[in-house]
Structure formats: structure tokens, C-alpha cells
Image (tube, rainbow over all chains, first blue to last red; front, side, top):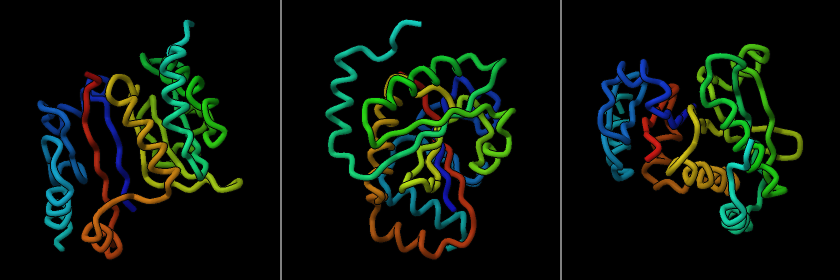
Length: 55
Length: 147
């Protein structure tokens, strides 16, 4: 139920623009419900996932 | 075309893949036109797959094989699905690459193959608990550049 995709920003510029990607890595969750810039600890990612799924 | 992976790199990959226990299937999706990096990505995977007998590769065209693309939720080319293979059964672990895995991302590709081979996420208990209760689909897209 979770799909995790590496997206090469220069090949998919429309998508990069859509999510305002400037610094990489940027993790965009559920089409922009969350955007996490940088390589963050797992706990940060979990906090964002909880926030956007209302858990 | 010239070999993309030189002998030294192949040897390093061989060593990285040596502990692989379970099999992994790579599903590659390309397109005939308007895909600058498709040919190189396909060649890269064709050089990579034979390095381990636990690794296999199937090649699809996103247009001709639209049904397979839909089944694996692939909408961008070049696209790579890193799936588990048990006998003849391919299981989708939700791991995808969109775009050529070059530079640092090649290391990520190798790591992902090992991850799927290990059949375990390596995530924290807190994350596992969250995922167990997750009742809706989640899409995580990590934007990267090769350097």
C-alpha cells in the first residue's frame, strides 16, 4: 500500500516544478500533502506520515 | 554501444551481491520514442542482471505492455520496479525508480536490490506499527539528481 519512488528530477521537470523541487533530496508524499527536504531521520518521516494520514 | 559497467565495478557489484539469499526481479519499462535515457537504462540493467543468479530482468514497453505498466503502477519512463521473486511468483514491494539510476543513484539501486532480497524493510518498530494500521495508499516520491 506504500509505493516509494526515486524520481530523477532533471528527466521529469514538469513533476519537479509541480512540487517546487529546488534542494534534493526532496520527499514529496501523496502529491504534495507533505514535502520533506533533505535526508531526514526516519522519525521525521514517520511524523509527516502520521500528520498527513491524521494518525 | 560500449560497456557501461567496467570490470572493476562489476567485481564490486559481485561482492555486494554475494550474500543475496532470496531472488529479485527487475521490471524495466521503456518507450521507443521521446525517452532520452531509455536505451542507457536498459543497457545498464542488461549488464547488471547477469552479475547474480538471484537477479532477473524483464523488459517491457510502457505502450505495448500497458497492462503490465498499469498492474505495477508505472507511469514514467525509464521506469524500474524492484520486486521480490519466489519461484515464479513476483511480489510487488512498492519500490520504484523513475529515470536513469546514475551516479549516487546507482548505489541506491544496488542497496534496494539487497533490501528486497532480504525481504525486510529494516525500519523501526514505530514505523512498522504505523504501517500495520495504515488503511490508505501512500505515495512517496524522492526527487534526486545524479551528482
